[in-house]
Length: 74
Image (cartoon, rainbow, N blue to C red; front, side, top):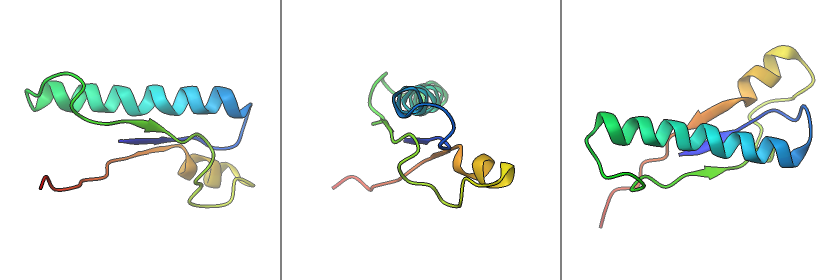
């Protein structure tokens, strides 16, 4: 689970926020899927991977997101 933010505010705060967002989604999925806590990996990427320009409110909103990346088990 990847957490992302826009570039508003400080980078360190955005990294922490994005990690908290990713962790919250992971824990929710683990609970809903009856998985052991901590089995879903998370990372907070902050403002480092925007999907669009942060120059508008709409762009910033699009950059504040959580992405779920699925990698099949070997």
